[in-house]
Amino acid sequence: MESFPFQTEYQITLSDYRKASYYGLFLRYRRPLQILFAVLIGAGLYCLGGLLGLGQINIFVPLLAGAYLVWGLLLFAGAEKVIRTYLRQDDCLIGCTYSVLLDKKQIRLQIPERKIDVFLPIAKLAFVFETSFAFLLYTSAQDVYILPVRALSDDQRKLLRENLRKALPQRFSTRFS
Image (cartoon, rainbow, N blue to C red; front, side, top):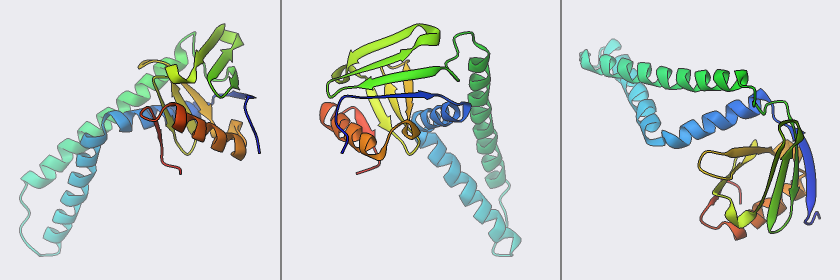
């Protein structure tokens, strides 16, 4: 069984960044997106029932579904625009080598190509989300670092999860036990 401290090196891919961006998008717009999907499914079933002769279709329902669909497409197009804009920036971190040293009480994240050296107590992290693909380490509301699970062994991942659960009881979220 692994123990602290441990170190890992990895590179963030466009896929990692895109998944993290969409995860954040779904967190920010969780309720409106739930409504979007419910309206689209409900309108689809309503129109299907109308086409099968179960009643007459009220034109308002497909128009409402269309408006929600346009909003959803604009939301996702905006996310893609943000991703493309980030890729063109000089300080883009995609493809850079990250070095992370994790201790029971602190984290040190280095990106030598960008002269980034973040060293802080784990208790000072703003928030941490564990997803199926990464740990999203928020050092502030605006700054997030991605620690892909592929960079950790299973034991390291379990150890980190338990440590974060204890150190950040209200600021750590995971769907894993």
